[in-house]
Amino acid sequence: MSTQQTQSPAGSTTPDAVEQSLYEQRAKIYPRKVKGVFAALRKSGGAALLALYFVLPWFDLNGTQIVLFDLPARKFHVFWFTFWPQDFLYLAFILILAAFGLFFFTALAGRVWCGFTCPQTVWTEWYLWVERSLEGTPNQQRKLDKAKLSAKKVWLKFIKHTIWIAIAAYTAFTFVAYFTPAKELTREIMTFTLGNWEAFWIGFFTLATYVNAGWMREQVCKYMCPYARFQSAMFDKDTLIISYDEKRGEPRGARRADVHVDYKLQGLGDCINCTMCVQVCPTGIDIRNGLQYECIGCAACIDVCDDVMEKMSYPKGLIRYTTQNSMDGKKTRILRPRIIVYFCLLTFFSSLFLYSMSQRNLVDLNIIRDRNQLYRETQGLIENIYMLKLINMDEQTHDFTIMVEGINDLSLLKDKEVITVDSGAVAELPVRVRTAEDNLDGRSTEIYFTMQAKDNAGLTIKQKAKFLGPIN
Ligand code: SF4
Ligand code: SF4
Image (cartoon, rainbow, N blue to C red; front, side, top):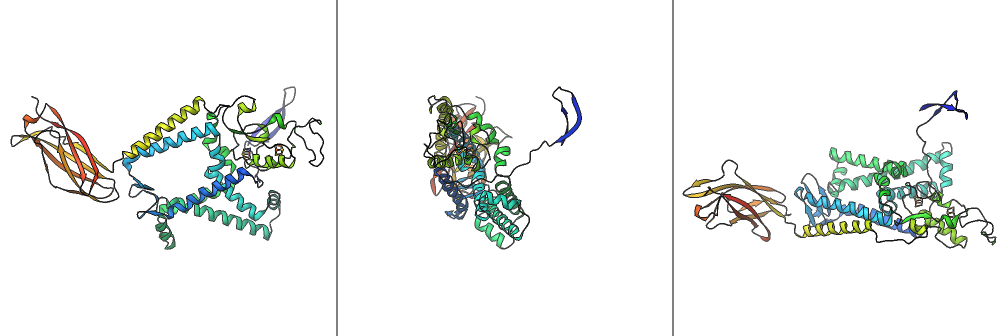
């Protein structure tokens, strides 16, 4: 709280002090239900995403959960692929692609992500649906909230919050099931043997979902989401935005739909000032005041205004998807420098990602030279010592053979002819390589180690190393 002194118009300070809160009290928003093309798109898209999210952990592929981030085993199963910590590069690729994808679609189509696919939007819609189903229309909800405590009110609120918490708990359970197999997690819950970490994360995500979708709703988009803040930097006058056609709509004013007088003669525009666009807005803004960062691009105002226009027998599209240039009567350009740059970067990184995935090797071989001695002479031959680290990133255990080439009459001495490496394991193999000094080109000669699985020739890797000898 702050204490302020007021100033008289003449500028002199009056002694009466007033207290003013620095924080504005949040007024709960009760968005109206909306029907229309975009509402259907949003609901069906949201339902498909929810179904995918909840169903995926229950499917297995080759005996492993289809998407599983197995942290203890340091293995990430994503459909047909298994990634290891060594595959960090692919994660970087995925993050880069996601970032450029977001930039590209935001520059092209504005906040489609926020309005149609963002989890905050999808879960909030679901929570709102529960609220409306139990408490009725926005007016009935307001009335209930203002009403004195009664058995009916307590019962309705109890049911609503129980359903919200159940949704939040199942959301949290599913999230954790992407890290601990869903069936194992279910068994642990049923037998009261849930681990501390799993219990913590289920509790944490239950609370986060319940608070974000049930209580905070549009506040998350307005005050917490960083994307809402920086997305305007990606906008230009050709970006698709949801906008009210001020030229057509103003001056706004009420009129009767059944009295067919030329309202234009009365000096009115197409907006009948019904405020339906404000009443359906989940962030509580008035789109007629222009583009605002609070607008999540959900298109609910388009649907409802089109409905109003239809009832008034006016053309639809008073609120519509358009661009600033189009509103200013100028031509909209889809192909413009930033779109081309984002598209090229997206294509480049996608191609690089696909290429590196196609070249991805499930075995790796690290060669470490013995640091104590550059070389030594043994039985008239020059000998170098190496430590080989064999990495098996395949789903199965394999027996591997090691070969060396690159210099005439090279001999490879090792303790084992075949080395077994478990799935996801790293095995070490010390080796000695020998040759006659006459076979060397100079101080340093390149040699090549090849590691190959005995049962799968496709699991092969060839790595270069240096063989050092005396200075000639
Ligand atoms: S819904 Fe359409 S007609 Fe009604 S106030 Fe909004 S812009 Fe005007
Ligand atoms: S102004 Fe329209 S598009 Fe923007 S959040 Fe409100 S209802 Fe959705």
